Length: 195
Image (cartoon, rainbow, N blue to C red; front, side, top):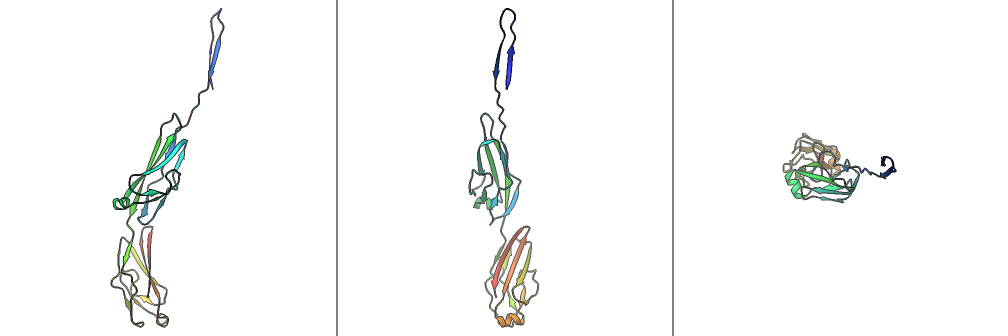
């Protein structure tokens, strides 16, 4: 509270007056750090912060959607344009309390293509013979690793089209599962194939 006192000269009497000055804090917005996701994923804006605001709203430069545009930590689902562009800007806007101005913060979400593996249909083979998988294709990966639920062996589990040689236990069971795992940074694609 501020006050002002005026002192008058004789013969006048002095007077005083007081006023209250209210200080309202400006809004502070932080959309969070830039991030990268796989195009099959959603992104939770868990690092965003907001203070001293009246209304909070999220918006996007792309065509994706938020599960709720008026909560601090929404989940964003990239749209087709976001995926084809490879990036999208997500904007957190705060409407300040009167008379404060609004605050805006942006973060860039980078969207990388999913790993694609194809032609992994079940292969037919005479149980005692090696199983070939020549039609398998994959893209957008940096490493591959084949594994099996059986006890047979792969000619090279780190290549796209290895040869699987069933063990005697696989032959007796007449079935095993082979798995291809493709890795790219923190993305993982798994495909399970009955053999």
